Length: 146
Image 1 (cartoon, one colour):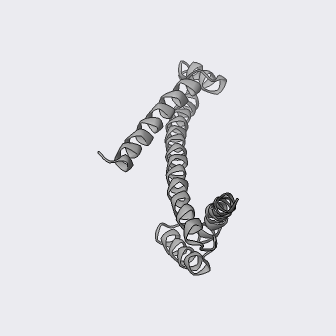
Image 2 (tube, helix red, strand yellow):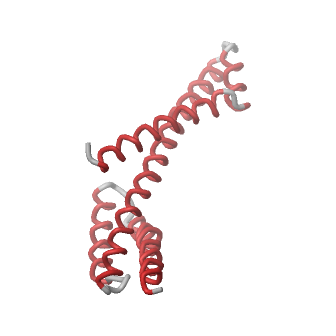
Image 3 (tube, helix red, strand yellow):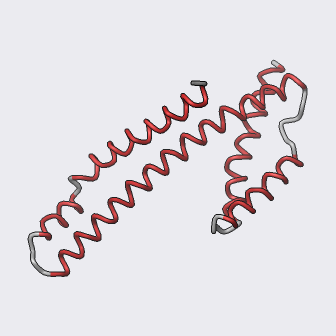
């Protein structure tokens, strides 16, 4: 396997391990304990609460897995953009590429819209990820010139 494939599987294993940790962390919480004891109550309301708590915990596990995957993907993205920054520094290119940024923003807006998200998510993503990437490129260039 190549390093990208290895990295993907490692990230997937990290997500599974995070899922196991999260399940252990939420199994005996006071909120869950209250819901579990209410199951012994025969009222329909208590049973519905327990079912709702189970559903929420399952969804939270999914959210935790998605968050872990996003963090791992961001790490991979920053590793790749670091390589771009190093190449830019050696070639004498500026860290900022406005044409690329405009292309990215348009593409991200389209993807957001196709995914049923508000296009403002693309703007926020650009501010968070692209601006951070540019800062890192500046640091790489500065370290190359020292």
